[in-house]
Image (tube, rainbow, N blue to C red; front, top):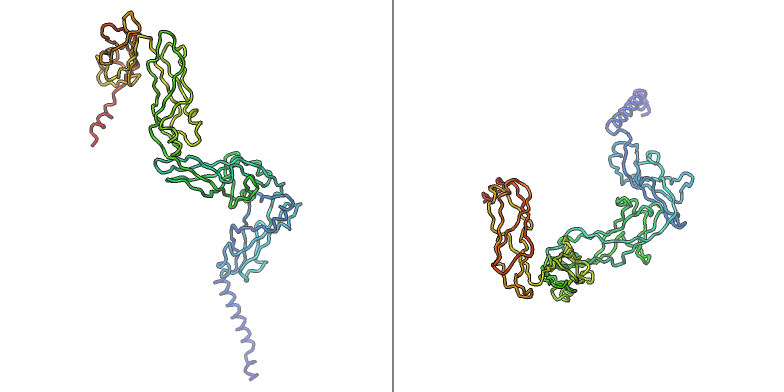
Length: 443
């Protein structure tokens, strides 16, 4: 037996070595060893209380909270790894104050990977240590979107109060510019109470990053931490009430020999947003807060009134969005024995109208015609009506495009005369025939 094993021993050893060599060549060809990078492996920070207990806080320099891991291993091993195969930790107890760094520790869930097979870049976490400060900030609700038709946002209330306390690194606290809560009211038709994330912007209007937010502590005015950096907001929806009439009181006495002939408001009605009970208390009408004083007036005058001065008296009423609060109060003043009529432009007779021209009148709706009696009795009542008056304009001089101020020729019955001359501005433009043809041929 011994003779058989030792027979051709040299040849057998050579064969074994050749087999091993072939196995190595095949293995290196089909399963080569190489280095692969796994990017953006997150860093977990341990023992942060080591810093916070000293009333200090820290920020990661340049916001670098992820690293790249390089692994040298065979392809069969590397292909089974991913970024989440590694655990990278920065233990704050190992903080090097001189360097401002914390060394990183890494482990791999795959037991085939040895420590010497791994290389990290960077190999340490660079941090900036600062004093921890706390400051109060005002917090406002910002609504986005539009509620269901016929509704608007009436009130928004931050349940925990509109003041927030923010603690964190002094340099970060110093750049905070605005704190808001965004509430989406799209298609809402009833009020709600819910939690919404708090948004913090720096003084340039840029939203703080997740890394910056992670270094902040958010609390309500009582010092209670706000969970998930969110706050509870109550949103109230109010109905839109259309065409609420406006009224105004007139006080004072006009000059002797004059009278108040008309008081009109433009607009005459307004759209309000209000709680149902509040609109009922109004009685369906808005009386302007401040009266119009006509003391000593001798001529017609327009007053501009801010409706918000009136609505500010009410907690649960306001103007519909995108509506001007400016109200024009027109006070017509006539001499005793006179009267002012508003004649529509359409009732004025036009002579020599230029062809193929567009006419734009100013005023666009009506001209004021003031008349008085020729009777010696100035107190005599004027029984004249608008239908008793005729007016004409001659457009013969308006053949060239431009703006013209033309006299209005007014004819009055016997016993009456004009208080003053009447004129109108006429703008002459080229007629847009193409647009007119298109309009006439539609459908």
